[in-house]
Amino acid sequence: MLPDYLYIIFFFLLGIAFVGSAFIVSWVLRPRAPNSAKNSPYECGEIIKGDSRIQFNVRYYLYALIFVIFDVEILFTMPWAVVFRQLGKVAYFEMAAFVLVLVAGLYYAWKKGALEWQ
Image 1 (cartoon, rainbow, N blue to C red):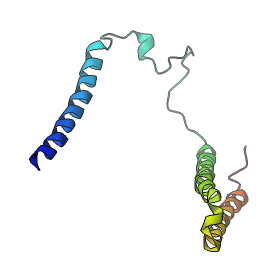
Image 2: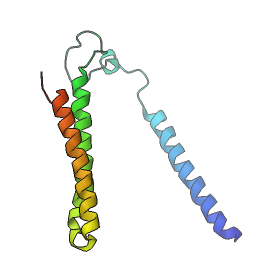
Image 3: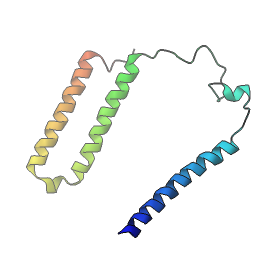
Image 4: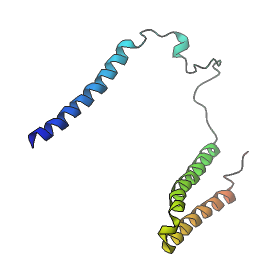
């Protein structure tokens, strides 16, 4: 019983040592005094204009959320479609209800103007 726990403790300590050594090696090898270009917020060669904090239109977030909703829909629909024949009629009606709720959400977003790009 005790030797089983010793294996767990050994691998736990080995994992902590591995992570700790990675931190120590990166701390030792990092540059000590980076130049002003390295400390700038952009490292892609663009000239910095203004403050880095700007306001985005909320429509960008709405597009992102609608994309995520329909991306998750595909994640649920694809495995269901693969095993459709084995599931039966109950699973068909459950998926129909799921898709109906998503279509209702899309209709709501469309009517509210969340899909209008302006």
